[in-house]
Picture (cartoon, rainbow, N blue to C red):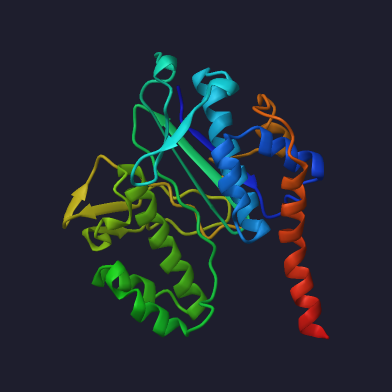
Length: 274
């Protein structure tokens, strides 16, 4: 069975009351509570999309009924299916990972292979200059990687190259499940020589681990994204919940709480312009 690459545009998703309350009923109760604790609506939307992507994967590709799915996290934060009773050839050996930032939530999954995924939005540092930001992050990259980043061109192009390296490192440590305790300088990336083009996936990036080239890992770094690359399939909200079974009763207060978060940034802008 082939791998899975799904993406959801959570940035442009403006859930209606019925959509948000249905989504909340279709994730585990503790997940619903955790999502409800996010301060900003955009973060709550991204987290909700991530959990629905995971559950859709388990239901669709592993054949576990939605109501039987029990997802947990390893001590390092990697999600896994915690259903001993659901063990079968279809569920065994799957590795899956999610990431969400900016406008996208993404999922990658493979059967029989370890997989990690990370998505980053290129943004200017909010409270410092680009050179100072790079100085603070010095220990995260090797001298070779910094030389590639700083040769990229303008500050914006350097930031794009920085986040491209960062996403590669994050995806690797998420695949091996070690968390941020891993020394990122141990993994040095040599980017694909293929020219970057929108909608094109580069597959010739290599990694040196402890100065030795690793041939058992494959990397699919897309360009700085305006859209996910062709290997990712966009899912709509209807797709996310098409196989879902609500797990508990509707909670109208959950929508009211979300609305307050969604309206808060607008109120702040109005105050700032008075």
